[in-house]
Image (tube, rainbow, N blue to C red; front, top):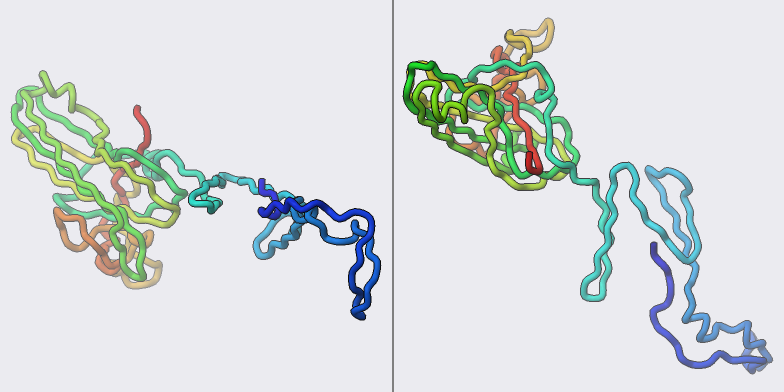
Amino acid sequence: MSAFSHVKSDAIADFTGTVTGFNSQGSTTTIVATNLVRPSDWNSAHNFFQTISGNTAGTSTASGTNLIIGGLNGIEVSHSTAAGAATLWIQKQVQDGFYPAAVFEEAVVGQHGQATWHFQPMRRLEPFKFDRLVIPIFFSNASNSSGSGTLSFWFGLYSQSGSTLSMLHSISSTQAVTMSGTAGSFSLFGGSRDLTIPWTSTIDEGGYWAGIASRSTTGGANMTISQWFASQPNSNHSGIFGVASNATNQALLGQGYYSASSTDVPASVAFSQIRGTASLAQRVPVFYFQSGTV
């Protein structure tokens, strides 16, 4: 709520009765004191009149002495003061975490290829915060197979700049395991697991793309490390019906494989460098951002 008033306080007493003043012809005249603007008028609150236009709802005009500002439909309003100035902040509520649609779909395990970058568009996002990136994986080993293995993940968050994806944020992680068959430490890694990468940040509203690459090495003949993919049709996407197919045909803009494998997060990737016709391009890696302890 905002009150409109004069900040100067005038201590001079109000005139009472009548006073002598000048009229429009410059002649003296008698004026009733209450018809003048007196110190008490300057010290009181004053009316305002406000008009809004454009994409509005409700009334378009307001008047009075107080302006109340509120937020609806997830909009947060806050206020701060510093050095004698006041600032009104208006923003959307920051959500906890982000869960792509693929998280809720039927999933299968597999591997997109060593250090092969897969890109997928993320739906237009509300602002969200997180303290970890979660990538579901599947780990298995034979009871009579001992050895060690490592699993590395690279993840980049991208925005569109013309016909190119430009990297905004990135993170990487390498996990190492050593075990004897399915005994001992296998109980900490075996089966379907959530690989978590500590990462604390807040992402503004906008449209983004995710790029994911992984690489695994295993020292045991029967040790396997796999990702989880959304179980989309396992067939090639061939582009528009009635039009010759091209490797860069993408079912969704920016969904598919980067044409070069890399263990570095690419700073930029042109849409023309993303191959969308391979069958696994449809099976997007599952990931999500989480905020808070589970």
